[in-house]
Length: 430
Image (cartoon, rainbow, N blue to C red; front, side, top):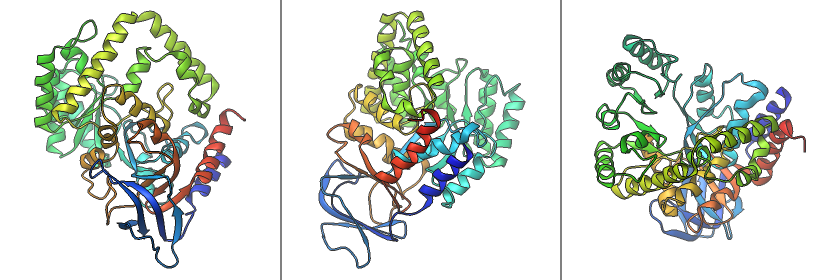
């Protein structure tokens, strides 16, 4: 296992081309507008986008990539990923980072902190490993990790001192513990986000300055949606509050559809990407799915999913920024591949392809305060994804990756496939 992990790191760490790379005759989706720039020449030099124009001449000595019939988009962000521990069995952490990058994810927000991850974040930043740029939450604060309001405040200060980017809120906190976290995070100038505990009313979380609301279950209790339609008046009011506060929502909508069993098990079992998980894990997923389907009445499950779609549409129309997050490593949601699954799920809520793409490009860049990613513009970091078909025509085309550029380093489809094959063979030996 250790040898395979080393081979993956070594293989992907070698840049495929020279320092200057040119994408020629490519259609560019800049994400500064829905307009597609056709037959463009994009020049990348020293890790940055040097120019985008309709000039067909490549600089002398540059390596040229033929973009005919292909589409260039900014690198993608997955803003809710479960990144394993550094010492996870079989090199799982590096496998996850590889799968993310191979699917065009160049920025990832890890939402479950483990010892050693901060060193990995630094190695990713300096190019010592092949990995998306990492924005990391520390150990989640929940009823399992917090004993009192005083303890909650101390844990926030400790995570700040250690260098984590975000305090992760999880379930089971009392209102007093939650308020202590929010107050201390404000004092320490540290962001906090994640779940909205049952003890905390959604408007209160907004008032206290929670950074992101992850998962739509925070809305279920507030809008009382499991057994009936959403209260449209209440939904409009909370959407307005979210927009005014500038809060981000991370829906993880594909996960909700799997959880409530509205995606048929036959469909989930046919996902080609489940070959990157051990068969034993897939068997557990299937058994868990069947138990949930038996436990949750089908009319209630359908109602929740439909209400989620309504909530997403209203949030989008109101201007609440959404961040694409997949909760990758959860059942049937393989890292990287889960991005396409989430995008297809969002399209089921009536979001347009351009609106969906913004949740994975422009919005993560804005959330992270990064003006050099999220769009294809001269001067920006060269995090790019070359696709075989337009995601504006069908968001599922986000899965048709021809190659990925990470900080100016180009990885071909063959390189990505060879690295993924090493991961697959650990589990399936096919």
